[in-house]
Image (tube, rainbow over all chains, first blue to last red):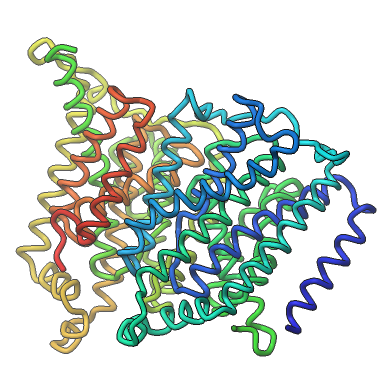
Length: 309
Length: 286
């Protein structure tokens, strides 16, 4: 409970200060929040269920491409129907995960890493090559953000508040999920799957449902991602994108949900801010990876007392 | 689409597969012996190409560049294994993130040293011609790639199946604990295999530099393809890597020629299916 209060306090302060921040900072914050949603979805898999997904960018990609294609080809999702696209994006992410999960959930350990990598590459391959639908290497340029009920999302600050609202809603939804009996049995599977199976739990189904839910949140993040950047391209779904999300979770602290946001903050700061300042930023990113693995097995949240759930 | 088209596509696919074999054989050996999912393998490939370019620039000798590049990268791999990977123990997730961290470090270092241009490794003129066989123009360089991969494959097979070191490696693959029990220094075997894997990847980078080029980002482009080869063939199996690289080389070529819109999908979808149905790959052992 305490940690939730801190998280909300920090987000509240950020929300209050945001109007005084420059446009670049607001975009950075929005990036952090969107990737924070993806990181939380990975945390549900990695931190709570023990499934290291190496292809989570795929669901973000599905949501983002869906949004871009609906907006540019059909003019859908630029008014009130933005909420329809949100629902469709989540459904598409969930449906993709439901299909992929049929293959992936059978595998475990290293094979789960490999199969999620391969599934992610399938999505990348389609995004990269299916020119008529996805614009190939160039991706799809959006034509402005939605506006409805007097809210113009083209204004970065307004859009930031919307993203913040989505982040908080996602956090509470996922928090509710991991606190529920279902969430507790996921932790049981993480700790000892065999025992859970002997106790009569259908562990395959539990993992499958967690996988689908994670896909839905990936899809949600994708819709926001498309509108945030105004462009969707294959590099959004490429392997480094998926690996980055895994790092965010491990860096922030697996099994904490909020840790993913901290990890997202670090990675976005390096990739989107430091990269604009110094040419050698990638040394810092690589070093963060190496040091996290060597010295921070339970992440930044683990540095605080009782960090691990 | 006549017979000529098919023959040329098969030839191109097989020669691309030969290059993939160099890249993937090391990856599969590393996985088999150490259970390490090495995501910096693509970086070894790229570094091999870059070091070779420097050697060629300094000495003018393409032939000299091959062993120097491969050995230099093998040394990098050796240091990485000893200092960072060995203490980590067996934890796939942390290995993945650690090796990705190194891949990013290598990427930046390569960019700082060699710049961001798309470079090409020019093979010697004798290999730059093509021969005409039955009305087909076949570049000698591609024939050379196939021959080299076949030679390396045979040498690896011989070393693994017929020598004492090979027996030690196989024992470590099958049961590391048991191997330690009978006095095999598995830590040293791991070191040797990791360096050998880096050596082979860098060799692939030099050879591939003539027709893929050498440029930033190549590392993460070839890496998933190498994993596709390893998975389809079976992780840890040399014969599997040979079969897998031929299948992937051909699938890639025919995919791009016949169904360009789903070319990469047609590469990774089989990888998914094999992982789901037979996670040990076509020729892998339990």
